Length: 292
Image (cartoon, rainbow, N blue to C red; front, side, top):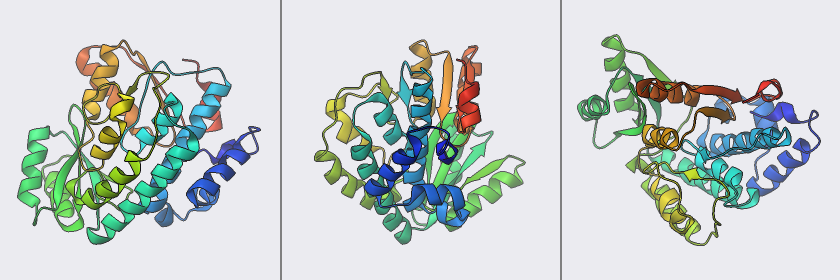
């Protein structure tokens, strides 16, 4: 989660202290010591993910590796705004901390989570949600790549959907998050974020920044609408990746923890017959080895 940068880069300690001062979370301690169940709480996880992603991008920039364009999956959009220069770290972390707090409140009312479903089409995922739904509690939350869809919702219908999918011999992967993000169950969070976003000033992106709602580059004049709408809408990640490839992208670096986004990028590229070079920038060692 980026904490190994501390002590190995001159700016990292101050960076994590700044993040702590803005967000009110001891992010360095959470990412270093956990415990995992605490880190997985939405009010902590969202902010830590943003901070780790921005930290990795700064370490890449220190090596002279600057992006030609950026995009972020879900909460990763907030980190993408810092990287693209539409807002500074303090502004984005203030918004991310608000989103995390509102998400936690929404999750208290509708506890649940999310999971990736493999070997499934968007239409099949919608039908599965309808079969397993119990009172409007399960939704498609991300169209990731060919054959992979994320669903999210209340725990009981989610568990039923995962059991049915596994019984059909298909893979599922639970996401370590305690909230049904990017679904209508987050409407209260969307309302709160709408108010905050209306009073936040964003500037033009220094490099193209692709959004989660329609996959197009952000228009900074529509930023409140685009970021606010993404709280309850599915992440259109496959569409975003196709837009990136249409623009000529042939190298993708994932900043921050995990590597799932690289798998999605490779799946979309393979469907299009494209050769794609990828790298993950999560640790100091990762960053030191990146040459693309």
